[in-house]
Amino acid sequence: NGEVRVSWTNSPTNQEIRYIVYRSSSSFETTAQATRLNQTPLSQNSYVDLPANDGRYFYRAVAVSLADRASTPSALVNAISDRTAPQAS
Image (cartoon, rainbow, N blue to C red; front, side, top):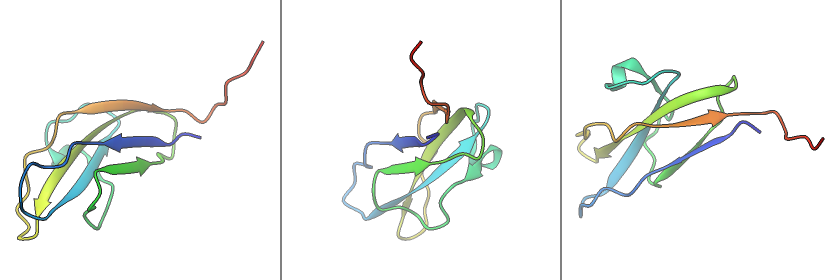
């Protein structure tokens, strides 16, 4: 149905960490080049995205401390959103 599930390994720290997920239709290095997907930082280490259009999308996550200190973006991953159901011939 076009959904893309993005997940990551939790940040290895004793601090309480939240996460922000970014998406772009092309490869990106900084979060300024992408769209922030969640307005409220997430406590879980996954996010389900439903892009408006089918296609390849690129994602990165950023860890944020309770003091609002952000990490560098995670490694870039990509996935294809596809709403077309498979057909048997």
